[in-house]
Length: 51
Length: 181
Image 1: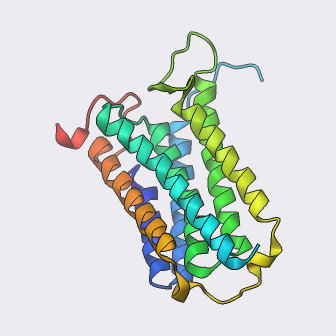
Image 2 (image 1 turned 120 degrees about the horizontal axis):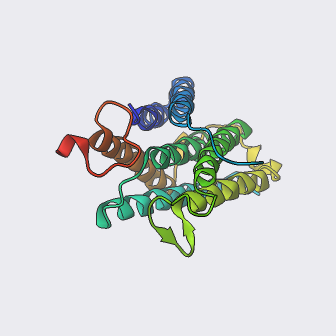
């Protein structure tokens, strides 16, 4: 599951290489979303800090 | 700054991002320093951010491509700062090796900030956007090498992550590759 952002950006790069800019941007946005959701899944512990 | 010079600088920038990923790979394979979940996400953020540079190489420099880089670098900086905060209190441990006194997640934060600063500097030069045509037909050898190398590293990181974590979320303290027993 944590490999999804990598593969989505690879798909985005492939789409860009073959001149499909809109598809490329869509794959990138999906990759960014996957990255943020995975970060949310892993950032659950409360930090013991005073900021 | 001419569009051609901008493209060369973007290619160099993409090679620099690739160098970061290669360094992380080298540490993983030669020193068996398996990346933790947040480390993997920082690598993914380098890939997400570097994509903006790759788009510049493929379609010519555009402000929107730099925006993608900025978004990716900021996401990476947030993830790296989260990991720094986990270990910021003395005695709370660290993860992985240190290089020149800083752990990799600290270096990642520094590099993401440098990427944001470098992008801001690049955006100061409006003439690079004068050439509105796609650069597809004038990809230089340097641009092609940077683009393909970056793509291979993104793919390699994806495959490496599958080997390490299989289909689920990665363990917090990985000790081996789940798919390799």
